[in-house]
Image 1 (cartoon, rainbow, N blue to C red):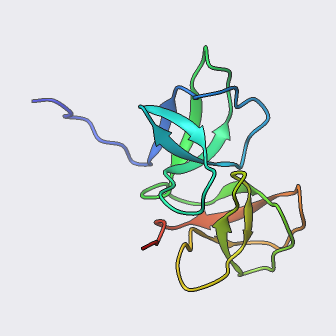
Image 2: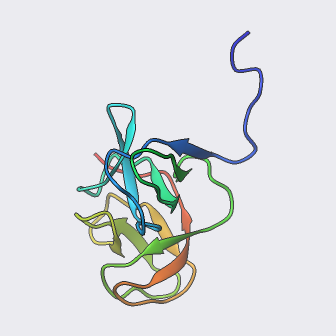
Length: 125
């Protein structure tokens, strides 16, 4: 029986599609089996906890099962308790509209800061 062991927390070691050194807090998608920095605000898989070069494995927290909170990299100002979505460069911004909610800010912050956030499943059309 394959997969007899399961995880208590949805944290994965994935090969990065490009160098992810210093990209902690960025959102990623899965492209051809690799973790690629997200360039859109929907269809995201998770957040980089520890970015590596393409010869290593980045540590990724999945939006669909990581427990607790993670640090996310901001592209603009967000408020404590504010809803977040992924910006076009993989960073995070204040949520706009009715879809694409991916996280909740557990602290306030401004552009380029890493703040604590709680992930939720990416909601999109």
